[in-house]
Amino acid sequence: MARYRGSVCKLCRREGTKLFLKSERCYTDKCGIVRRNYPPGQHGQGRIKLSVYAQQLREKQKIRRLYGVLESQFRGYFEKAARMRGITGDNLILLLERRLDNVVQRMGFAGSKKEARQIVRHGHMLVNGRRVTIPSYLLKAGDTVELREKSRAIAHIAQTLATVEKRGFPSWLKIDAATFQGKVVSLPARDECTLPTVQEQLVVELYSK
Image (tube, rainbow, N blue to C red; front, side, top):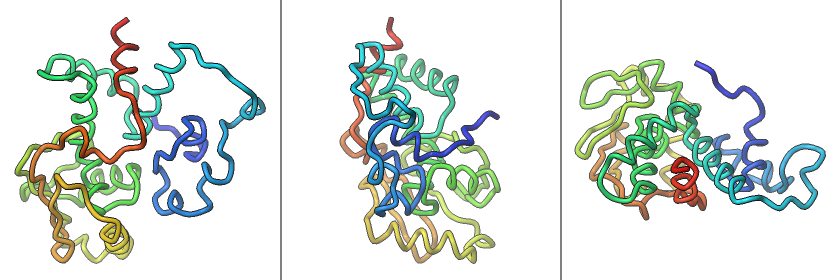
């Protein structure tokens, strides 16, 4: 499957906000946004007035890159969100939050979506006692997520979990760091999604044309 192989710091600079794509580096002064807070390229420091369409497109790209999904996947989530009851924009964010790779990162087993996707793909995670290797697997309220016993000796995962534990976990997740286990207590409300400033309504307007 196609994946972006370039500098992820350029993605954050292009969207003008931290997308936390590079684990601990994003929390230091080495972060690309801190060092060069303007879009990449020779015209990055020039004045650019965005049209309405450009604003909608940038917001879509920001959310898509934040969760590390491809365009076709993102469009599929939008269509599913549009069929659900409630506000389409909120439904879209909540579907993306329920992805297994996102929850693995939120629980502290990985520092970034890329790391979380790799951990899931390599079969390190169990959902309700069964191994799941699909990063896009949608979790439900009451599901338990844990690190396989054989994988608990991986030093990097334990170190990342300890670091994230100091910052705190989302309220809709319950984590027991000592046993490398977590539980989805409830489906997240929109205000419980710890995201950079995003305007999902612009994405709805973009796809509704």
